[in-house]
Image (cartoon, rainbow, N blue to C red):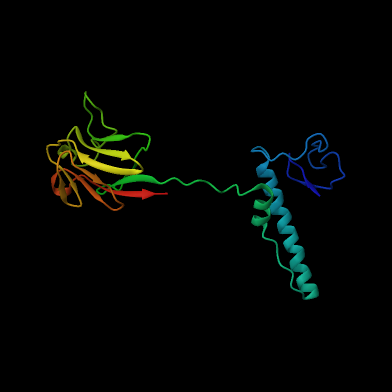
Length: 197
């Protein structure tokens, strides 16, 4: 048996054209590409289910132990694990007061947090959040360096606080998962820093 790369049907290996879709099997050998992988996976799953049904019937009739087929394993053996992906670690900040999540862009070396202004527009605009009047135009910067995120206050009027401790202007704090960042006093505009897969 072979698999038709056009429709995914199982076809006897001596057949020249697929009886399901008419695909010329002689001139077009099996080519696992993006266009037909889904059909092939579907066919393999269907074939695996049929074989497992037959095995179940044989077990009942003959009372013998025959292992069932792991269809996913069979598929990955033939076409590779299509679900394997390189997962990248993403950094997010979650606004405590509204639970809004903001993903930090890793393509920027410096991410400015603040409110719109004519000189340096912020990368993260907090003007729409409640109590944003306590946040300066460019209140703080998050720096992405060597796979780590750091935060520093850029001379804001109301200060930046990490876990309720003031961060002196110009000092960097390496952010850790769970750190609470407050922009301004009294924790009115605050975020929780976290990593997410």
